[in-house]
Length: 304
Image (cartoon, rainbow, N blue to C red; front, side, top):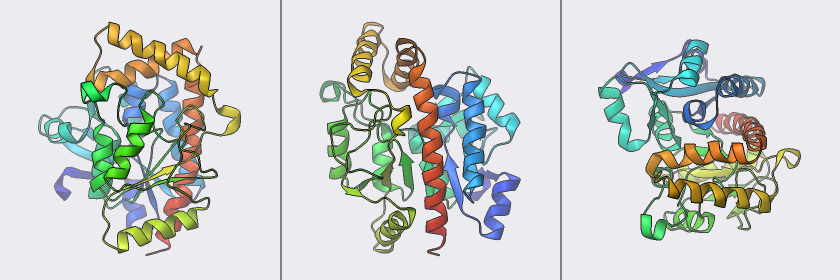
């Protein structure tokens, strides 16, 4: 297993000297944002984590290896690539074996973080149960990964393009705790309040670390959703984002777009329909999550 892992110099040094490390996904670079904002955001997110006292480890698959920590050239390559494969649990072995370029989703990043013994992972928003899943069975592999892989996932809730009620029901069925920061409401990516509640509210990194440490000490394996709402000044109005989302979903259905292509299509279309404001919100929430995730990684690190 270790033969598949390649650590950047920065991450290797952090592991040797005992510094906390925060995992970052790479699908947000290749499929979540346009170039050059994707690469610029990736750099800024990594820097925010360093400023909080932790070390960033952006994860991707390259030349048959799982890279834990990327160079600036790697970030640019991912940001400009038109053929990076979106890698989830199903795809990881194939992309490694075929030595293709792969950008990791939430599920695959959780797997790789766990292999690298990294406990905290920062992303934009998790995947979930898609609208209409009762007939399409379109449910993100992220949810099953949260059920079985012991990594804390700091996010701005689940993407608002999903059926958030069913997503939260699914997480409850599999015993995945959903924790919200600063409010009881569960955030919905572009907007602070989904209309649903999180299971628990834990505002400080120390409280979150106590909870996570206790869960894993009890042998309760699996992840934790740490839902961190987008800052008020960067949030989009719930009614507006819902209207735009419904239109984008209708267009995706009309064009026959399905499977793993749905989310990138919807995010790009929502950006167009919102006049670019959704991209600004997306960037703001990822940076906000990086701060929360780095603080959590530092607090968890003190538990060892």
